[in-house]
Length: 330
Image (tube, rainbow, N blue to C red):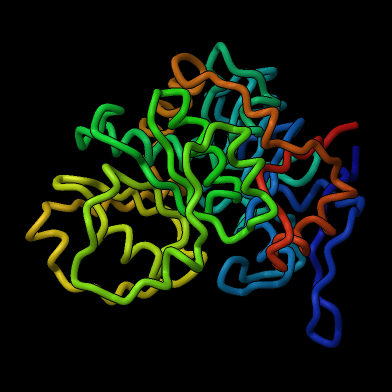
């Protein structure tokens, strides 16, 4: 086999970028790395940015996007993984400055690879993907900081995105009351259908006059947007509450006085799944194969590679919700 099918992002002469299905030469892959046949991938916002030529995500083009991949090992030159081993690859530099998982094959260092736990399928692992893995790391951090269902509601911002919806399903699986913050009113009924107990409109949430502290409302939060939403959540925590911060869709700025931390003992927990140690990733994947093994079917749409470029453009325009599972082999 001299070529394989995958998404190929290339730069036009006018400085614009195009992403399309291509027959890609096998020699773009590193023969000294583990060769994996990819069966499933997923779509993430980083993939959309990379496919649009964002140099902060991907420096060199042409390029194969895709920060998630699940498949079987074809060859490992160093012999760590036997051929046929089912594996998951998420994060590190996959799909950013290394060719990614939106293709039939990928080559990666062995230190990026997780063996698929028993109890998970390749398909289910990519329904979860980086979004679900990040939600799992956020949940683990909240648990490690003592947050329990009896403590009160947990609020999830950016609730209609993949990370937000994965967080909601996980929280409900573990018995928590969930409040969602969302600006997409057309999806409020859907959020209720997946278990959300209360929905706060994002504009209404941010309209209130700024205060040093608000009434104590949330036991904890999983925040995916940052900015003013994160600030108000921190100011609205119950005593000893925690926020797992894992996104910055709204803003990277945090113009905040220290009152929530000193007067209420608030904790701000940074969550970053991409470069997390394999041992932590393995721990979370193991949980998803056992006590966190719930259905994501309601929030996942299954597509093929040919459909992915259009959906990634819709992502950039804010027109998508939930998760997209990509079948890379037909």
